Image (cartoon, rainbow over all chains, first blue to last red; front, side, top):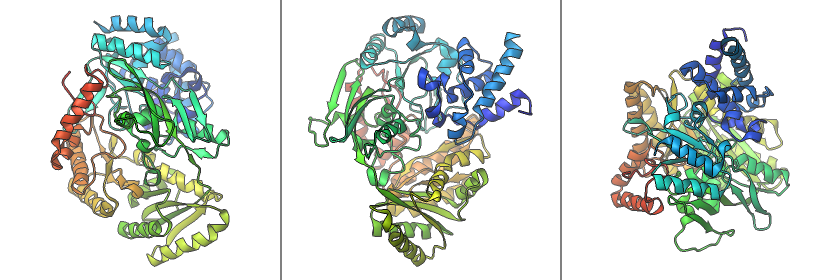
Length: 99
Length: 486
């Protein structure tokens, strides 16, 4: 990730069309059955965070339960870098919220 | 009663884990692919998400909603493209609204396969089982059977959502849509009453056919808990042909010749020449230039590949088609061609010049397809707007893809105007404003116009009465499909 984390998140999030193809292979979603624990949900979490500054305890849970396995990237027709978004979000959270 | 009180009561019914007013969680369930870029605010004060685990819980939630007159928005994977399961609605007359309050009921947590019979060729599943999950189950157990309805969203789409939206897909010409494959249903009506309708058999006369009335009702007549689905033997082998023509009409005539010789293909897909170019640009997949058509025909035995390939080649030569690929299901190009077709929507998205792509969904008789494709081309020139046509040649279901900016009221106005012309031309040609995506909110006005065009406005009145019978308080997905006063 060479560009600014926010620019990176913005760019990757803009590729997502909420089709849900990524959800099938997500190991965490298959345990939790709540959209937030899947790639599509995590992209949405990032989107509403950077665009509307909406963030909740659930956002933390959704972002930090991703195991970064990249299964979603393989099934995403738009090749959204979901693990990259999650890592960028975690860095951002550490920097802006926890610190 | 305010939403906090509703939430408190819902927690009593379902437990805390299955009820949420978290603003982020709500946002995840408030959207679908059409409304995804729009982010409604303050949802936590207006909406609550529930995730029931069984039909008893669905019933209790619906009874509460009915008593307190709170709308319920039932939802599967939210892959519908007609704004039918989102809290946002957009009419064909360009009225953009957000529902005022309600309970979003996510049925995707119910993912059990309840019954399966290889001999009787049926499977009974809960609403949240995904279509691909169902087929993986049949494959992994070496049943030799499959569920043939395959909406493009089959990896995400749930059984409940596919039933509710009356989904179709690539195999529509040969196998039809959900309507032909749903044998029975368990659902809860607007008063919280449980219904178990249909059979485990193809033949089944139970008075009025409530099962198929629920198919395509888009959550307005009942919340679907489970479905009994008919299964079919998987095709032995498939011979796939991808061919290109300079003008669409040449390819279309070739498709008709293949259909005449081999019967209705398993799939027959069309991609406009510009879509072919976009797919090449974004995926690097390229087999040729021009308008692309893909046909799949079933073959009993791989030894027939050469014989059938030669016959197809002679049909192609007769129609002056020079650019083509023929691949059996053992050939590496077989999957590559399918991927090319599946890349249509993502490639259109990646190469778009405007913020949104609206995928239209119309159907015309097959003989009218060339006239319709030509009509869309005139719209493209008239409005100087990117509109690309692709879709299912085999059943006359086309998906013109229209670029626009729905956030800009003026552009949205133009997009909806073009959308109306796209839909109503289909009606004029003997087709319909929706083939498989449903009515949602985007097609309500167009549906009414379709019936008006046919001189059948009383049908709308009849539908309103049906809605009132199933859901007297109008709490189930209100304002969708057939709106009535709340």
